[in-house]
Amino acid sequence: MICHGPVRRSARWLPVGAVVVALAMGGCSGGGSGGEGAADAASPSSTTAPTTGRAASSPTTGPADPYAVPEVIDAAYVERVLAALYAVDGEALRSALDKGAVDAEVIGLLQAIYVEPQLRIEVEALIRALGDTSGFKRPPGDRVARVGRLRQVDRRCVIAEAVFDFESVVEQPSPAPGGETLIIALVPRGSAEGTPNPTGWSISDAEYIRTGEEPEQPCG
Image (tube, rainbow, N blue to C red; front, side, top):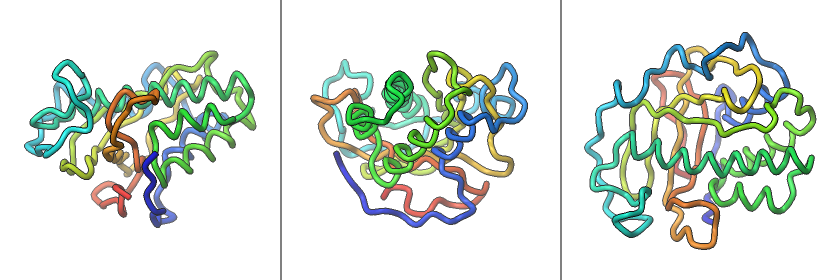
Protein backbone atom coordinates (compact mmCIF):
# COMPACT_ATOMS: atom_id res chain seq x y z
CA MET A 1 0.00 0.00 0.00
CA ILE A 2 1.34 3.44 -0.98
CA CYS A 3 0.49 6.15 1.51
CA HIS A 4 0.61 9.88 1.03
CA GLY A 5 0.38 12.59 3.64
CA PRO A 6 -3.04 14.09 4.35
CA VAL A 7 -4.20 17.01 2.26
CA ARG A 8 -6.14 20.04 3.39
CA ARG A 9 -9.64 20.07 1.95
CA SER A 10 -11.63 23.26 1.95
CA ALA A 11 -14.92 23.07 3.84
CA ARG A 12 -16.79 23.89 0.63
CA TRP A 13 -15.49 20.74 -1.07
CA LEU A 14 -17.69 17.70 -0.78
CA PRO A 15 -15.74 14.43 -0.56
CA VAL A 16 -17.26 11.68 -2.67
CA GLY A 17 -17.51 9.43 0.38
CA ALA A 18 -19.98 11.88 1.87
CA VAL A 19 -22.11 11.62 -1.25
CA VAL A 20 -22.20 7.84 -0.96
CA VAL A 21 -23.34 8.09 2.66
CA ALA A 22 -26.06 10.60 1.74
CA LEU A 23 -27.35 8.29 -0.97
CA ALA A 24 -27.36 5.25 1.28
CA MET A 25 -28.99 7.03 4.20
CA GLY A 26 -31.97 8.01 2.07
CA GLY A 27 -31.10 11.70 1.80
CA CYS A 28 -31.72 11.59 -1.95
CA SER A 29 -33.79 13.92 -4.04
CA GLY A 30 -35.86 12.79 -6.96
CA GLY A 31 -34.53 9.58 -8.40
CA GLY A 32 -35.38 8.39 -11.88
CA SER A 33 -34.07 6.22 -14.62
CA GLY A 34 -30.70 7.94 -15.02
CA GLY A 35 -27.68 7.82 -12.72
CA GLU A 36 -26.18 10.75 -10.91
CA GLY A 37 -25.73 13.65 -13.28
CA ALA A 38 -26.89 11.58 -16.24
CA ALA A 39 -28.76 14.50 -17.76
CA ASP A 40 -25.58 16.57 -17.88
CA ALA A 41 -23.13 13.93 -19.03
CA ALA A 42 -22.71 12.55 -22.52
CA SER A 43 -20.75 9.40 -23.19
CA PRO A 44 -16.96 9.96 -23.37
CA SER A 45 -16.88 8.38 -26.80
CA SER A 46 -18.93 11.24 -28.23
CA THR A 47 -17.59 14.21 -26.28
CA THR A 48 -14.02 13.54 -25.24
CA ALA A 49 -11.00 14.05 -27.40
CA PRO A 50 -7.90 12.04 -26.47
CA THR A 51 -5.34 13.96 -24.49
CA THR A 52 -1.82 14.39 -25.71
CA GLY A 53 -0.23 13.54 -22.39
CA ARG A 54 2.25 10.69 -22.51
CA ALA A 55 3.22 8.32 -19.73
CA ALA A 56 6.96 7.87 -19.31
CA SER A 57 6.60 4.53 -17.60
CA SER A 58 3.95 1.86 -17.20
CA PRO A 59 2.69 0.65 -13.80
CA THR A 60 1.82 -2.65 -15.47
CA THR A 61 3.52 -4.76 -18.12
CA GLY A 62 2.54 -6.96 -21.02
CA PRO A 63 0.94 -5.93 -24.32
CA ALA A 64 -2.14 -8.07 -23.61
CA ASP A 65 -2.83 -6.29 -20.33
CA PRO A 66 -5.87 -3.99 -20.80
CA TYR A 67 -4.56 -1.78 -17.98
CA ALA A 68 -1.02 -1.37 -19.30
CA VAL A 69 -0.37 2.32 -19.81
CA PRO A 70 -0.61 3.21 -23.52
CA GLU A 71 1.68 5.63 -25.27
CA VAL A 72 -1.08 8.23 -25.07
CA ILE A 73 -3.35 8.11 -22.02
CA ASP A 74 -6.84 9.11 -23.05
CA ALA A 75 -10.23 9.30 -21.34
CA ALA A 76 -11.23 5.82 -22.53
CA TYR A 77 -8.19 4.26 -20.84
CA VAL A 78 -8.81 6.15 -17.59
CA GLU A 79 -12.47 5.11 -17.62
CA ARG A 80 -11.41 1.47 -18.10
CA VAL A 81 -9.06 1.70 -15.12
CA LEU A 82 -11.72 3.34 -12.95
CA ALA A 83 -14.21 0.61 -13.86
CA ALA A 84 -11.77 -2.00 -12.56
CA LEU A 85 -11.09 -0.04 -9.37
CA TYR A 86 -14.73 0.61 -8.60
CA ALA A 87 -15.51 -3.07 -9.18
CA VAL A 88 -13.25 -3.76 -6.17
CA ASP A 89 -14.98 -0.93 -4.31
CA GLY A 90 -18.27 -2.67 -5.06
CA GLU A 91 -16.91 -5.91 -3.62
CA ALA A 92 -16.01 -4.06 -0.43
CA LEU A 93 -19.49 -2.56 -0.18
CA ARG A 94 -21.26 -5.88 -0.72
CA SER A 95 -19.02 -7.60 1.81
CA ALA A 96 -19.65 -4.90 4.41
CA LEU A 97 -23.42 -5.10 3.87
CA ASP A 98 -23.40 -8.90 4.16
CA LYS A 99 -21.43 -8.79 7.41
CA GLY A 100 -22.87 -5.60 8.81
CA ALA A 101 -19.34 -4.45 9.56
CA VAL A 102 -16.21 -2.98 8.02
CA ASP A 103 -13.78 -5.73 8.96
CA ALA A 104 -10.18 -6.44 7.98
CA GLU A 105 -11.21 -8.07 4.72
CA VAL A 106 -13.25 -5.03 3.66
CA ILE A 107 -10.47 -2.65 4.61
CA GLY A 108 -8.02 -4.80 2.65
CA LEU A 109 -10.17 -4.41 -0.47
CA LEU A 110 -10.28 -0.65 -0.01
CA GLN A 111 -6.53 -0.49 0.60
CA ALA A 112 -6.02 -2.21 -2.75
CA ILE A 113 -7.58 0.67 -4.66
CA TYR A 114 -7.31 3.80 -2.49
CA VAL A 115 -4.39 5.65 -0.91
CA GLU A 116 -4.50 8.43 1.65
CA PRO A 117 -6.29 10.70 2.06
CA GLN A 118 -9.06 9.06 0.02
CA LEU A 119 -8.65 5.72 1.79
CA ARG A 120 -9.60 7.21 5.15
CA ILE A 121 -12.56 9.05 3.63
CA GLU A 122 -13.93 5.90 1.99
CA VAL A 123 -13.51 3.73 5.11
CA GLU A 124 -15.23 6.30 7.32
CA ALA A 125 -18.03 6.80 4.79
CA LEU A 126 -18.69 3.07 4.59
CA ILE A 127 -18.79 2.76 8.37
CA ARG A 128 -21.36 5.59 8.56
CA ALA A 129 -23.41 4.09 5.73
CA LEU A 130 -23.88 0.87 7.69
CA GLY A 131 -25.95 2.87 10.19
CA ASP A 132 -28.89 2.68 7.77
CA THR A 133 -28.61 0.39 4.77
CA SER A 134 -32.21 0.69 3.60
CA GLY A 135 -31.27 2.87 0.62
CA PHE A 136 -29.02 0.27 -0.99
CA LYS A 137 -30.12 -2.10 -3.71
CA ARG A 138 -29.85 -5.78 -2.75
CA PRO A 139 -27.31 -6.64 -3.78
CA PRO A 140 -25.82 -3.31 -4.83
CA GLY A 141 -23.79 -3.11 -8.00
CA ASP A 142 -20.74 -0.96 -8.69
CA ARG A 143 -20.65 2.79 -9.05
CA VAL A 144 -19.72 3.91 -12.55
CA ALA A 145 -17.36 6.78 -13.34
CA ARG A 146 -17.88 8.40 -16.72
CA VAL A 147 -14.81 10.42 -17.65
CA GLY A 148 -15.30 13.75 -19.37
CA ARG A 149 -11.81 15.16 -19.87
CA LEU A 150 -8.33 14.83 -18.43
CA ARG A 151 -6.86 17.83 -16.65
CA GLN A 152 -3.42 16.36 -16.09
CA VAL A 153 -1.50 13.38 -17.43
CA ASP A 154 2.02 12.51 -16.34
CA ARG A 155 3.95 9.67 -14.75
CA ARG A 156 3.10 10.89 -11.25
CA CYS A 157 -0.62 11.55 -11.49
CA VAL A 158 -3.63 11.52 -13.80
CA ILE A 159 -6.45 13.94 -12.94
CA ALA A 160 -9.81 13.42 -14.61
CA GLU A 161 -13.12 15.22 -14.58
CA ALA A 162 -15.92 12.67 -14.28
CA VAL A 163 -19.55 12.02 -13.43
CA PHE A 164 -20.66 9.25 -11.08
CA ASP A 165 -23.59 6.96 -11.83
CA PHE A 166 -24.99 5.26 -8.70
CA GLU A 167 -27.98 3.73 -10.50
CA SER A 168 -26.99 0.16 -9.68
CA VAL A 169 -25.92 0.98 -6.10
CA VAL A 170 -28.85 2.76 -4.46
CA GLU A 171 -32.60 2.89 -5.00
CA GLN A 172 -32.84 6.65 -5.55
CA PRO A 173 -29.67 8.25 -6.93
CA SER A 174 -29.50 11.98 -6.38
CA PRO A 175 -28.21 14.47 -8.94
CA ALA A 176 -24.65 15.74 -8.80
CA PRO A 177 -24.12 18.91 -6.73
CA GLY A 178 -25.00 21.96 -8.82
CA GLY A 179 -22.13 24.15 -9.93
CA GLU A 180 -19.54 21.57 -8.91
CA THR A 181 -17.27 19.20 -10.80
CA LEU A 182 -16.15 15.73 -9.74
CA ILE A 183 -12.37 15.33 -9.81
CA ILE A 184 -10.71 11.89 -9.60
CA ALA A 185 -6.92 11.53 -9.29
CA LEU A 186 -4.99 8.34 -10.04
CA VAL A 187 -1.45 7.66 -8.86
CA PRO A 188 0.83 4.70 -9.66
CA ARG A 189 0.69 1.98 -7.04
CA GLY A 190 3.52 -0.26 -8.20
CA SER A 191 2.99 -3.98 -8.62
CA ALA A 192 -0.60 -5.24 -8.47
CA GLU A 193 0.46 -8.83 -7.83
CA GLY A 194 -1.24 -10.46 -4.88
CA THR A 195 -4.02 -7.86 -4.64
CA PRO A 196 -7.55 -7.71 -6.06
CA ASN A 197 -6.54 -4.55 -7.95
CA PRO A 198 -5.81 -5.60 -11.55
CA THR A 199 -4.36 -2.21 -12.48
CA GLY A 200 -1.20 -0.37 -11.58
CA TRP A 201 -3.16 2.62 -10.25
CA SER A 202 -4.79 3.78 -7.02
CA ILE A 203 -7.25 6.59 -6.32
CA SER A 204 -5.71 9.34 -4.22
CA ASP A 205 -8.54 11.87 -4.52
CA ALA A 206 -12.22 11.85 -5.52
CA GLU A 207 -14.09 15.02 -4.63
CA TYR A 208 -16.44 17.69 -5.86
CA ILE A 209 -14.98 21.16 -6.33
CA ARG A 210 -16.54 24.35 -7.60
CA THR A 211 -16.62 24.36 -11.38
CA GLY A 212 -13.67 26.32 -12.74
CA GLU A 213 -11.56 25.90 -9.61
CA GLU A 214 -8.62 23.56 -9.04
CA PRO A 215 -8.37 20.78 -6.45
CA GLU A 216 -5.80 21.19 -3.70
CA GLN A 217 -3.01 18.59 -3.87
CA PRO A 218 -5.12 15.85 -5.52
CA CYS A 219 -2.03 13.71 -6.11
CA GLY A 220 -1.10 13.56 -2.46
